[in-house]
Image (cartoon, rainbow, N blue to C red; front, side, top):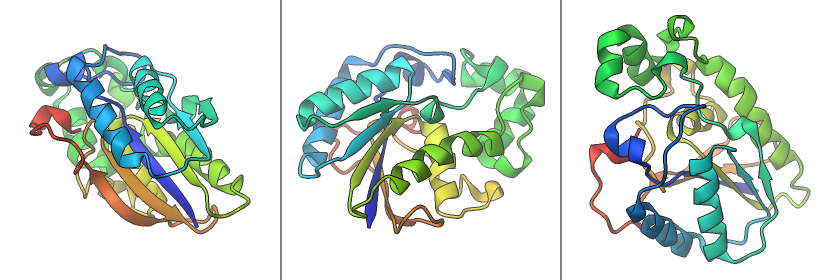
Amino acid sequence: MTRLYFVRHGKTEWNLQGRYQGANGDSPLLPESYAQIHQLAGFLRPVHFAHCYVSPLPRAQTTAKTLLQDLDQNIPTSTTVGMREFNLGKMEGMQFSEVAKKYPQELHDFRTAPGDYDPTAIGGESFPELIKRMQPVVLDAVQQDHTGQANLLFVSHGAALVALIQSLLGTAVKDLRKDGGLTNSSVTILEAHGPHLPFKLIKWNDTEFLTKKLDPTDTI
């Protein structure tokens, strides 16, 4: 069976500030994030990876570069826009408190009722649109695993990965947030018996290897 490891990028300055980054915003990783990525690498080091797929956004690229250097496995790597974060339109760059005042319905639905989320007013991306662009990256990667036993690594973003992973598990759009969010530098593990949905969940939002005491700004 193919095993898939989904990593959320390290914590950034905007994560700490409670500010949406989305598909077009970005900010540097915090100094503490590098220590957490090193801890993640220590956890993943026994696993031999056949390929790594990375979002083009700098925070994910930096996370992947740091992680892969630590793993020291010469892992083939592909950068793909399919792994990019949600396009959040006008919410990008805004603090959560600002969004709550200006776009209360969109914020509520995005966080807690994805089945009702309509991004028209903010010029953003819908959950179905996101899933449509992300799933093929994973399904194609699994299809290319001719051994049926490869370990594949994906480095991406919190909100996007929640929607993607839940969709791979066969979760309905309205329930995509049922298990909560993902923490910076966390790993979620799935198994696939070929590129056929649903996949099997092995571990959700694993942070057991992180020594830092987590706070609400670590998870989205």
